Image 1 (cartoon, rainbow, N blue to C red):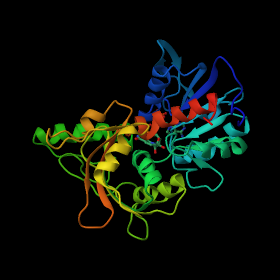
Image 2: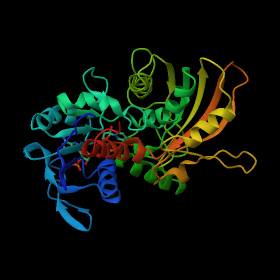
Image 3: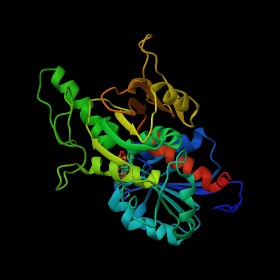
Image 4: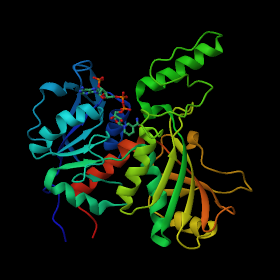
Length: 346
Ligand SMILES: NC(=O)c1ccc[n+]([C@@H]2O[C@H](COP(=O)([O-])OP(=O)(O)OC[C@H]3O[C@@H](n4cnc5c(N)ncnc54)[C@H](OP(=O)(O)O)[C@@H]3O)[C@@H](O)[C@H]2O)c1
């Protein structure tokens, strides 16, 4: 049996970096909701919101400035404050012996940093014993690999074609406000101002998330392609189109899978119904399928519209929906922290 990551204690000192943001706020809610053994809690953000107050388990805490915080004595730091902030501060936290679980894209593709989804590759966490940094994958990648893994274990997946329908919360609190403001403005007969997302999102869809790369893909698409292979540990062919839609919470994905050998919709439905972290809602006769509005605020990855793809051998379609701020970010990070305080199942 491998040793524990952290010594056994009644409670662990936890920092939430980006505690005033969408993901940070949800991390606090999930730490409390899952009764994570938090001793000292340290909410951190930039100088902009240092001094403001947040609530955790019925107690008020003052938000502190990350720039002048000394991480000594921390056990775990949950970072969700952007890639540049992570690159600058996570090494200092890790050097103090604290385990960093980083939600940004800063470390995800580094060879010596593990990229972990607890339902898929918890063993990869072993790598973090050395450098104390664990990367949390991109939100769209997480929900897809949770569904992919049990199917791949039954019959290897050869190719994945995914189109995403991503909620504005994936771009942070300011993008949520932008959708609300634009919607109000347009309904009142006024113009919609664009500040955060690359185009008007109200009553629109935008095939552009993150920046464009030289090959015509966006970085969000590239993340899904590269991160899926790293997490699954195999060279599956993956191609993605990432689209922002005017939904507040929960990303949806239309996924087409091609397997190395026969895989039917019925077999896939049975496998997914038994898989960890997944709820199947798939009843065409009853017109029942996963919706972002139902998935918002919930923990599972919801899968439906499971059907054979008659246009290609050994292929099927899935519709995958999950709350991007919970399973796509905060919940996945807290599940990783839970393994760090308990240890990997054998
Ligand atoms: N939203 C999602 O679905 C999702 C999913 C996966 C990963 N992520 C990643 O999580 C991170 C945060 O996302 P979010 O949606 O929570 O964004 P957000 O709502 O805009 O919040 C950003 C947070 O980061 C803090 N911050 C920004 N710059 C900082 C700095 N220099 N030093 C310290 N704190 C700083 C902000 O603090 P102030 O209040 O001081 O500005 C705020 O608490 C990003 O890296 C994002 O890519 C988000």
